[in-house]
Length: 285
Image 1 (spheres, helix red, strand yellow):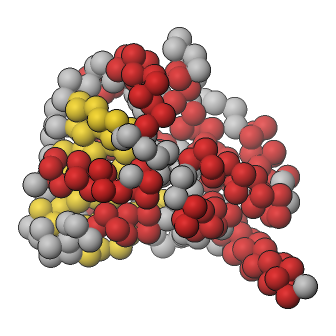
Image 2: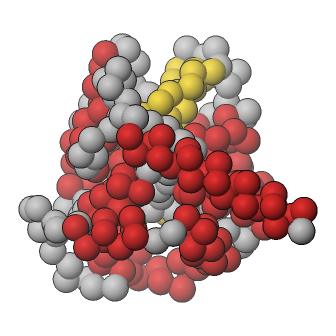
């Protein structure tokens, strides 16, 4: 009985947090993210987390670089408890990160992005090839939808209304259960399951739906031909079964170094952390 009450209290608190997220926009924040700054190096790294994730996903990664780099760790607006902003889009988030780099005189940073954050890293490197020095893409593709349809064509104004209404109609308890049920496909390290699930549960549903819809409509396969900087692409072990498809997606990224993990799933930083750390250290140092 005690645990049932505790679970009910947790769900209630998460629901209150969700309501606060929906109604309290980040009016005073000119950028579509919160940022934590750490480290003392002369060079800089910008860490972009994946879909509905907190910047805390990079905590163990940053430890390896804070002596050599100044680290800017983002949590995108509306995700993992960060206050949402109206009308989020992939393009607005890209431009917001670029503006932050320029406004703060961050000279040629490295950008490390996971999942959708990896997509943002690719987009910035393609659209602003002189702005950054290197990118690391952790388990992301130039066009997610093309995995199922190689002939996929993005549309100018995708209709996200159905996805939004479906997302907002799900009860908080059912949403929690759905998110938890997907974790075995994304995360092998079960010690991190509750942490990752709770990031998504306290994310703003409107942002969740709109960004999932918009990112699903994003196709960077041609754009990445403009990338000039070195690009390390770290991919989960499952993608070893699809190497021809992955190679085709990245064929226009001439600087790409594609490397495949031998174990683990989407959250490579948790599931295959020794291999992951080794790849990053070798590429950056």
